[in-house]
Length: 466
Image 1 (spheres, rainbow, N blue to C red):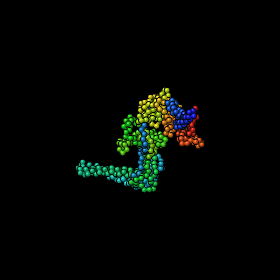
Image 2: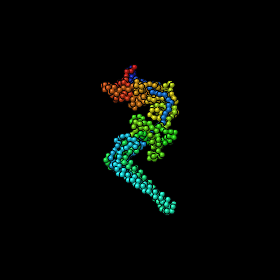
Image 3: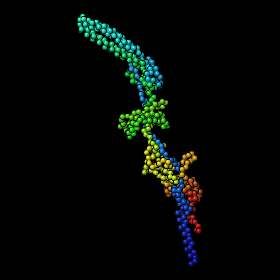
């Protein structure tokens, strides 16, 4: 009877030990459970209590210029192709290619011999007609006197009077021929019609030129001042017209690579129609181009000032975030907690944003550090050694802790300290027998378990009873 009880008692102890060992292996060691729970609590606690390092700046009041941007083409105000107006031999060329010339400067000469002879003929013809006119006038005086004494008929006097008028008209016609011949002769001297810069010479000295030549002799382009033609969407036309009625609008020409200002000008013309194919309207601005930095045919960026917003609230553009409900910013309250505030952004560029409502002057807005930030979270305004925010966030705390605890079951990074993959490989190759469950735990450890969690007891080992 005593032996039977002892056997029963021993078998019960072994059964309890085996059940305890199986539970220990399947559920994990108390230390591992404690570590996992502690890591989750640490991630949750850090998300609520650990301050997040951020950069913040105060909203300010400022005058904000309103610009309309476009891309323009530099176009000279005047371009002239200098062509000969008479035919003849080009006997001289008086300009150099690329030279700045003034209006009226002699550029070339055509052989004037033939045209000088035509002028001389016209002058001689006038002298001949003038002599005949003088004789006719003398005869008219005689006939008038004779008719008064009935020594000659009135018909003779009237005929002589008509002859005088005819010769006077002939003299006037001769004068017109002289003026025409003189003008044609003047065309043999080719002068610059405008001030500007010459281009490449199209014909050389000694060639026969014609008034019908298409290329001409040279092209002169005015560079000072110069124009820029650019397009704006038709939606902005009314805004431009309203501003243009108040006065000339300043326009800046910018470099396309560095955005540096090339020259300052003003708007001169708004086209009288909208291009139906593009939905844009053409505008023309004029620039002094004193340094010759604008060149015909060049593409430049253009910005035109149409308005200035007086004393509006501005914040850095980086502070404005976007969400499902629209734009918002993180305000830093007096107790250094983050508060989400919806805002109405009136205008925004690469540097600053104009806030219509939602932010007041001197409100502190977060500009950097949004990755771990949430509404009501504690923050600390900090900078790194170089004046920038720290690049590496703490391993625990904030959104990282919550993401780690949520992804641990999916093979993601854990919320606590993660052992390097190399350490786990060394553990797997250390010779410790693991079996199938040991391999599964090794994979779990690589996904976020600590070094202590990576060394469970060997399979089948039963812990000693207390």
